[in-house]
Picture 1 (cartoon, rainbow, N blue to C red):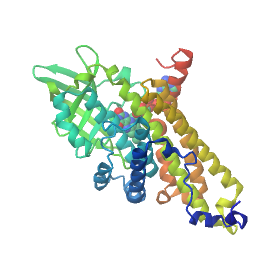
Picture 2 (cartoon, rainbow, N blue to C red):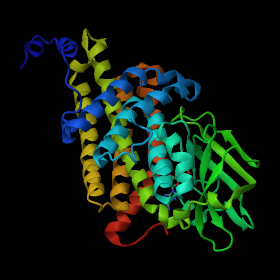
Picture 3 (spheres, rainbow, N blue to C red):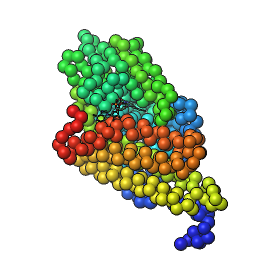
Length: 400
Ligand SMILES: Cc1cc2nc3c(=O)[nH]c(=O)nc-3n(C[C@H](O)[C@H](O)[C@H](O)COP(=O)(O)OP(=O)(O)OC[C@H]3O[C@@H](n4cnc5c(N)ncnc54)[C@H](O)[C@@H]3O)c2cc1C
């Protein structure tokens, strides 16, 4: 027992160099260069993003001025810069540890936009977009979900693409599209009326017939500008079809990796919740002592850490599978579903430890708590991902 503990001066322990809540020393699993890169990233996000972004969250605005800093940290090109899968995941988690909305932006940008154009695009598309995307000088939106098709979108998708003599005409509606009002283009998934296959197209947002309306009054991910987008007889060029995405199944690997990113997001958001709750418990005094001195609070903190470390353990194995090229959708679904379930519990405990202040977004716990609801729902809802896991071990699908 330390002198501080024997004197009951837990508060002093906080003022001394305080150990990170990362009790498994997760960062040490990276090589030296990536360790340094991750710690620099953490320092940047904690100093320049975490507190500053709260007002944007409150106002449902996007912090454009933070993009150059994120670009400087290399967050615009994680999927194409040769980073290890573990670093990539931990980088997503670090962004969540500061803000979930920006983590969503960075995750979608890397996994679903940069990654897809890099792997499924033509030389001309790569040349046109990749340099600007790497620096966040361009932003793309991933437009799959529709007003009438969420969980069943892969089979039910209604947006159409009709080939003409000199290109394609796109018609339909998309809902919930992240960055939809600020993006330069959308990667739109539409059904080719000729062969009934779902294909991917790059559609510039300034084309006639494209309109995007911001979805307001969200309870979570309020910094992310989600939109309802309409495509009304939008004429695009023949070369705007992503050649590698002439069938929906071509996107499967990337959709799987994107689901994995959300698993990392759930882990990072839990670390954020622990940071907030631990600091508050050490500072806040009731009954003449810090909250952290109460056993029930300590149990909460211990269980929050146990949730986060369990989420990490799962994602670590998923990253190893990615490195060994044997990752499958069941692994992504397990990581995402479990992380989002545990995040809900961890975030609720953090909110409770802050008492009344846990209801106010400026103390962060309420923001994490609300954002957790989105993590639970997007990239395949908790239920759909659970069904994918159970399908893998029974051989029986409950949803198709
Ligand atoms: C903030 C936010 C950001 C998003 N960003 C994007 C984006 O950038 N691009 C994009 O394309 N989409 C995006 N989405 C859409 C997201 O992927 C969908 O919301 C999600 O797939 C669920 O679809 P839904 O909302 O239509 O719910 P539904 O599919 O209508 O589901 C409603 C409920 O029914 C349950 N359910 C449905 N089917 C079954 C079943 N067979 N068995 C058991 N339960 C079932 C679901 O789990 C859920 O609880 C975003 C969503 C949100 C909220």
